[in-house]
Amino acid sequence: MEDPQLAEPNSVVADIQDLLLDTPDVEAFLEELARHSASMFSTPGNEVYCGITLMRRHSAGTVASSGERARLLDELQYAFDDGPCLRACREITQVHIPDFAKDNTWPEYNKIVTEHGIRSVLAVPFPLSDEAATAGLNLYSEHAHAFDQSAVQRANDYVQQASKGLRLAVLIAEHSQTATNLRAAMESRTVIDVATGIIIAQNRCTQQEAMELIKKASSNRNVKLRVVAQAIVESAGGGTVETYFR
Figure 1 (tube, rainbow, N blue to C red):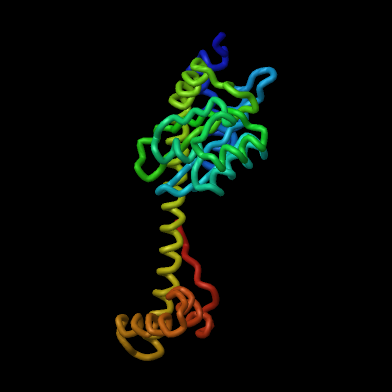
Figure 2: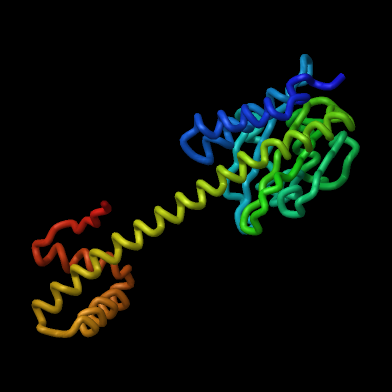
C-alpha cells in the first residue's frame, strides 16, 4: 500500500519550502532535508537512515545525514572514494543494492557496511541542472530488500519534488560564496591602495613604482601582498585598515 505521506506531491513541496525558509544556510537545509527524507521512508519495524551528498567539481563538498549512524555510513564511502551515493552523484544514475551480503559491486565497502548492520541501500541522484554541482540521496536499511519497486519509484518521485528546493539552496550558497569572495577581494584591495599611497608620500614615487616595491617585498618574504601592505600601514601609524560597505 502506498505511503500516504508520499502520495501528495504538493505536501512534499510545501515541506521542502518550509525547510528552506526555516534554515539559515545550505548545510542546515541539507541536514533537515536528510531528517525529513528518513522519516518519509521509515516504516514501523524498518527505520531508514538517510545521507545526502553534495558534490562540487567531483569532490564532496557537503554531506548531510539524518543522524550519527547515517553520517558514519556516508563517511565509509569517502574512505574508499566510492560507494552508492558517490557513484550516483558522479554518474547521475540510480544505485540500488537490495542485499549487500549478496552483492559484489564494492567488495571491501560491502563487507564493512554489512558489519555495521546495513543490508540494503538506495541512492538516487538529484537533478540540479548545474555542471559544477551534483547531489545524491542515500537511503540505508538494516533489512535486505527493504526498497521494493514501489519504494524505488516513490524515492525517485520524492527526489524530483525536492530537487527544486535543493537547487535553490545550492544557488543561494554559491551566491553567498561569491559575495564573500568579492568582499575579501575588496578589503584586500583597500589595504594595498592605502599602503601604495603611503609609499608614494614617503618616497615621492609613482603609483606603479610603489606597487612594484610592495610586490618585491611580498616575493622576498614569501607572504601575500595584503600582509605586506598591512605591515606598511601599521608601521606608518595607520592601524588596521577597514573597508566600508554602504
